[in-house]
Length: 619
Ligand SMILES: *[C@@H]1O[C@H](CO)[C@@H](O)[C@H](O)[C@H]1NC(C)=O
Ligand SMILES: *[C@@H]1O[C@H](CO)[C@@H](O)[C@H](O)[C@H]1NC(C)=O
Ligand SMILES: *[C@@H]1O[C@H](CO)[C@@H](O)[C@H](O)[C@H]1NC(C)=O
Image (cartoon, rainbow, N blue to C red; front, side):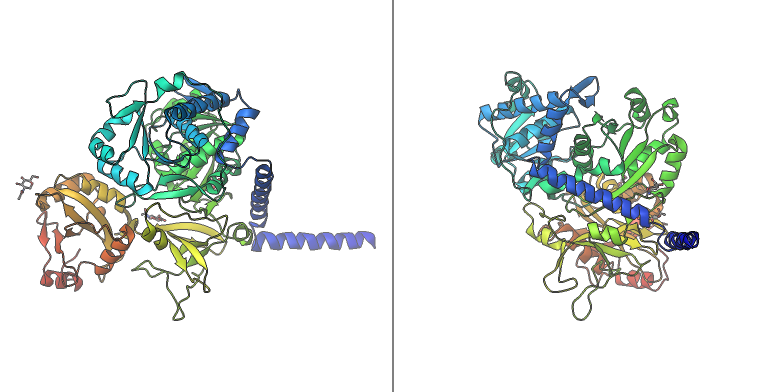
């Protein structure tokens, strides 16, 4: 009797297991990941109860716990957690002795990757300042826009980047901007030197840390150059602290040596990378700039076990000629985002199948994020029951032309079906905060969708198209306004606008795709503002395109604008331009059409337009 019962229970269990494996094959990985997230949430709560709340608190906690552990290795220097703590105290004390900046001030930092980037940043945190990281590829005139938009009154600039600022010195003086240079001497009287003052300061922290509200703003990060003018996204303390879990969630430990080559002014390196390293109490090998030829050499030299990537980085590595070190390293984990599956396959094949890849999806502005934690190639994350439990989100049906969410007659949005790309949106909550863009109410509001499923609900609109398949995998499809497809290829608007922007007679180029009846995808169009006193030189533009871009990326149409309308946000403007297309009757600007046989742009007349629309002229 007993054995019979036993065996039927066993058979039942087996059947259940088989059922689960066929119908919910990812049940266990999903559950384990969910529990891991929960465990992390619990430990975060416990830590916060004991007073370790902010990014800075976490750092100070590690500095107390592991003072002698190497934190940053940079070129020939090694700084322990204590070294960085003491140096950031000295920096804070130097600012304090000078009388400014102080608590509540916004300080812009324009520095390359170096240990002092971190020391200055932490020093400013200790003073209670909010920092704004500036992209150091920035052009002088956008610098002013950046300061003004985030409200910074102080700029700290690295010794090697002073030249970037010099061009706009008169304007900075007019704005009463205090200028500090991270050097022992100042290049001119407009600057105050920092390092000479730091040397005579005490390394002790001289006062209590300012009290902070975990829901308040921590820093500003300018979201990367996918749009004409960059926007200062507010990043809250909570988001910063949650970001610190990144490497831990990917499976790294305190024993790991983490190689960071990405620029620290981006969130990935500063919050996920350095923050993730602090969270673990691990060691970071920091590189001034990514170098494909040095990458594996550095990994061998420093015994690196974890690397942080973005998709392009992996592609550069795959395109680089072989070096002996590429198979001699101990790297076991690569964590990052934007890796395409074809590059991933190459990457692992060439650099070692021991390397585990953890692909994530995240945004600077909001809390929503995914991590690819299964062994599947291609998806960026999972959308199962447990995933939505820890991080609610929806994919909404969208209009392929306007890229807006489709609304029912009653004004509600519609969920995209499985297999249909939809706009990723996430309800705002304490865990998914959106603090908006500094000084840009219109643009901030534009990122929100209201009344999505019922009155009063608010969702953050990521602007990304994702696809949810039958197995609950999530795939990245498109970034609205960022890429379009033409002739079966992806055209990156950023890449085209950068290339076109190189020409002397072009001040600004806004690239987008327009639909042509009878054609798949979108043909490239460039809305161009000409440099003052310059004329369009179509044949020069054509020659330049041939030299710099693949044919599918060439703008087929031009639209000459007198100015990019700054009262409208970039996205709004783009949507308007996309909607107006290339119809000369609709647009009030001069339009041109690329005549490849003539190697020239010709004026787009109404009859030419008709011929294109009717398919008499092939594009
Ligand atoms: C997801 O992770 C797996 C295993 O680590 C990897 O094989 C796959 O390439 C990853 N997906 C992407 C898009 O990178
Ligand atoms: C274009 O991009 C999409 C996602 O952004 C990707 O799935 C697809 O493979 C890309 N196609 C080409 C030809 O690069
Ligand atoms: C356009 O540029 C080319 C050189 O790229 C030059 O030879 C030509 O004269 C220019 N045309 C006009 C109208 O300026």
